[in-house]
Length: 220
Image (cartoon, rainbow, N blue to C red):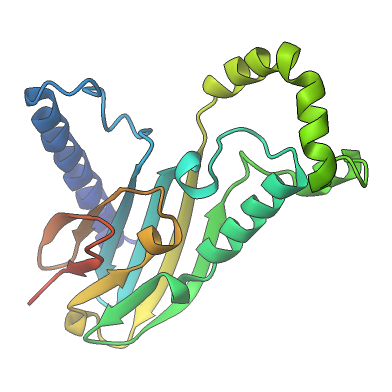
């Protein structure tokens, strides 16, 4: 990593910390019962960081797994495994998530990390063909719910899994990039608020996106 890029990302980390601290202080002032907010794991909230240096654009997304797949434990049923696979496929298709204003940006790499949730090739070998058929699932649950439910819930409640994805673009003209439209909440409606922090060679800022707002403006 060259010095300029390292400095840019370091600056973004400082901004992210300051931004999270200010919001946390504001929530504390309101007497929120979730005053430990922004410990990087609050259901309904996710974070996106954007760093633009010259024509190089890097985007990082972080979210509790619950916002993306609806659970935070290792996928066990075929349905859960399929949900993880579909979510990973979507996160690795950024053309559906991001659009750019002012210039064209070309994807160089994308990676979604859902490793905490899915070891599908091992899990599928352990699953009997009919074990998780829809018509059997309820019977199996009825049989085991009474003595397993509390143990399973206790185990799951203690687990906290994060999902992350990273994207690298080269823009035709970074200085002409004026903003982005972000569709993460559209595809993952369990995200109630997406906190976006951005930094460029010229400045930095932050904005909270909701289902009614999806635009990040980085320059006028």
